[in-house]
Image 1 (tube, rainbow, N blue to C red):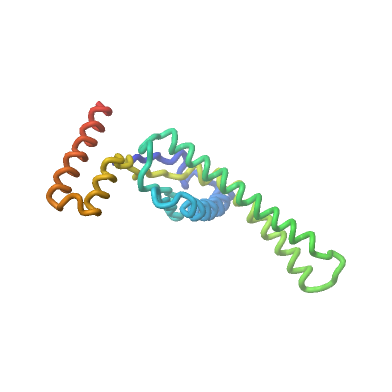
Image 2 (tube, rainbow, N blue to C red):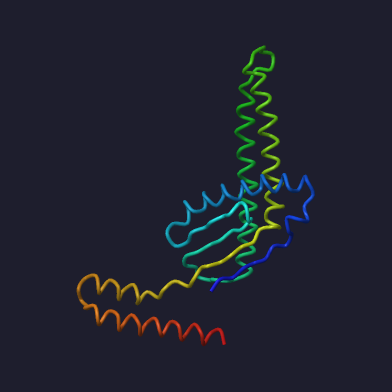
Amino acid sequence: MSTVIERQKEADDYNTADKVLDMWGRGSFWIVTQIINIGVGEDQHWRYRIKENRLSVSGESENPGDVAALNRTIGLFATIGTLLAMVCAHFVLLFANGLDPASAGMLATVGHLGLIASGTVIVGMACGTTITALGCELVDHTTEPLPDDVDELSEQFTNGDLDQHEFEAQLEDRLTEVDLSGTSESD
């Protein structure tokens, strides 16, 4: 079962400046998604679709479909995107320290134009993440993790302690127990 948090603001409601900032914010969200996928491991997978401004998560979660947790996730993405822009600004300033403003050369001119352009993009990313967060749709495809006894059952089958028929019968029994306990909690 999927949980969807609808957009708070549609793209049609944006003025021209908001649309430009939203474009940079979407780029920032995409970068953050790639970074988070490296860090979360195999339990979850995050996917961000730039065109639709949709963030999806799939895999296992202790609290699938929790709307408060999903809203915190959007805020976390916006915060990380802003921090990413600040880190980029730090490196741009470090680069600017190395430029000699008195030197007459193509490097200084290109360097200063690069500073202005990168500063514009950094401010756009920092401001754009907020606009993107307001318009982002979050889709949660996560499920609760299987109980540990299912893992133990799989291990017994792999070790050869159970044959195919016994494994399937016990697995079905345990999954039925999990399904029944899940439906009784939601009633």
